[in-house]
Image 1 (cartoon, rainbow, N blue to C red):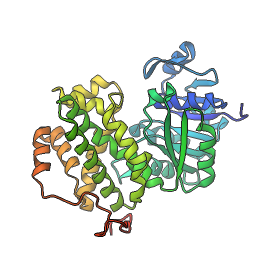
Image 2: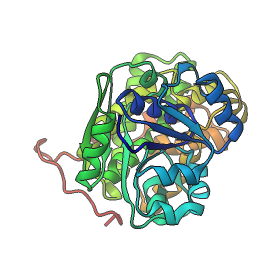
Image 3: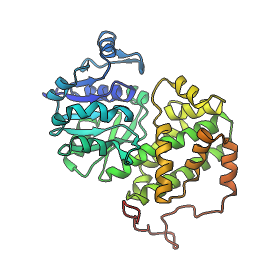
Image 4: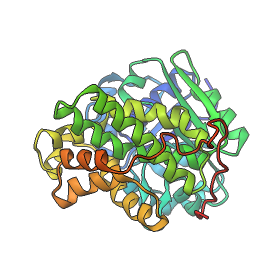
Length: 350
């Protein structure tokens, strides 16, 4: 057992799964949540009945609602709060966070200024060491010890090594990447396409159609990310194609579930209400469409899903429009000889 505990901020399904994983690897974990009643229930029942029912909490996981005490005790902090709550929850403890190692696991984008979650952490705590954990990591499967791989992304090599040391285990493998921006952006963007994939599944569309949607989604999200400065190669890995595949094919994915409900004929409000958890893809869609128009990136699936959710279009109309569009190249970043990548564009989209 390590002397110093590790903090996990956020009592949802993924925060709980990460806390258990840390504990199973011999670390004491402090699992903080905003709801004191939820923390008390989890202490008493030794599970998270609301978000991860049936998964026993490891004895070394301590649920708590005391943020100040948690941060005082811990140097390494995993942040698993919903994107809409992250800034508000952590801004009051900014002075404490400045000396911490902060790892965001939240996949979302703040509309004001197109800020990723690690950007928000850096805004709040400019002197903190910051990384991002992302990949095809469905919380329940992590908790049930399904073989899983993830990516810790940061230019801070020491942070990457530390996260690998505390999370890497018998069923959870952690790879490292220096492309924090690309890894985090991939984790946020794929949620949008999972909604489309869920709709396609509910409507009984063929395997060819679903494969086309996922593959074109990968091309579209990569094109957008590279315009903003990400490395296209990042999207060939776990945080790109890996996360996209699992989110677009698994009924365990929250965003897939929302799309499936929409495909069954429910309204957006009904679909989100049925889920009972945050589906980051809905909020990301609005932000992404505006940003794509601003930087002039062609994103027909994003525009199409926005038309379905907010403009009264149908999925059949969107796919028909996609099929009628002028054919493009299959892979955007190959040169005419088919071998070399084009140089990535700058983050400002030059």
